[in-house]
Image 1 (spheres, rainbow, N blue to C red):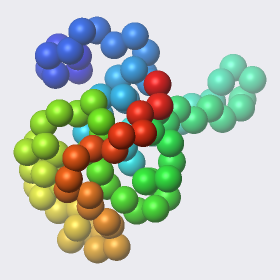
Image 2: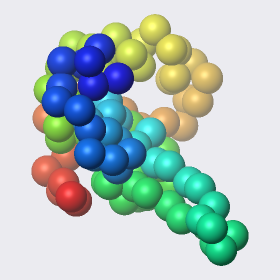
Image 3: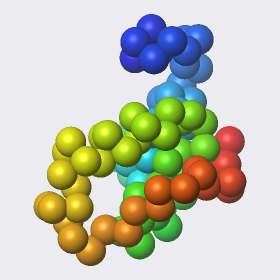
Image 4: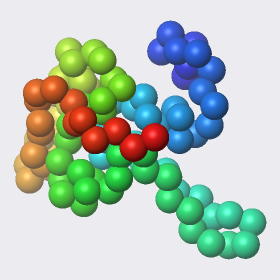
Length: 94
């Protein structure tokens, strides 16, 4: 994905997720070797659980963000979603 997105190689899955279009989709889960659940969410889980879609701070293309929501018809599928169309969130957790 880093090649497609014109980025340097990602250092980790969390580094890649920092650059995902929406904060609410930048969430990953896995079981570690001990069988414990590990959650990676560079922007936290508030937007996911709050049904809020906003552009991630490191995703600069606001028009691509808008097209993504419209072409996937997220608001038709999930009418309770709140979309923040303005500037991306400032609370970057790295």
